[in-house]
Length: 189
Ligand SMILES: [Zn+2]
Ligand SMILES: [Zn+2]
Image (tube, rainbow, N blue to C red; front, side, top):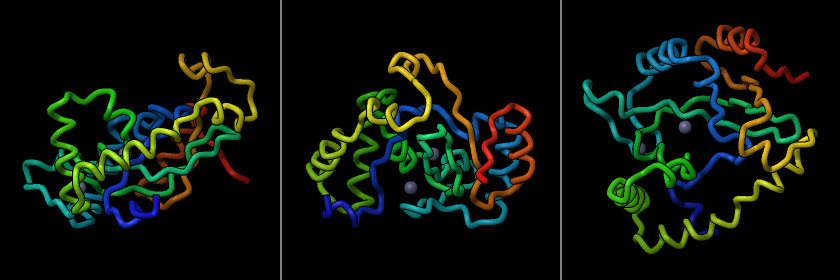
């Protein structure tokens, strides 16, 4: 695994338990876009991984990625911060989703991006991807929770993911208030 440590662009995937659970979805589009606009005005609009800087009319290709840690025991997404990241790099941070929903052509373009950013070969990418497949273990995730979830519960989403906002993000109070109202906020003592 060590040879991949130097990669600027890494492959990452959300644990099964937290699939589709994002602060973005929980707080809704309008607040989320205010946060994004605020960050885009304050920071230089470049991808923090590959350095891509979009033209003014292509800003939609610059995403706000949520840097999360996961508390399996209490089923909580802990938001540590937000990164500006281009759509291509972002695809590798949610690789489970990307593999499911990308066409063959799109996948090829993404792999090209990966190879360029990491200055590696396609075979390195394939080997790296293979090395990560062993990590997907929903059963072991369930065991870490305090509730008696079954695999079926996870499949149909029969449980509630809550959110803690640990990092300093714009409009943090509003985000917490919104989550609180929906009963989705988790406060660490
Ligand atoms: Zn990028
Ligand atoms: Zn993301």
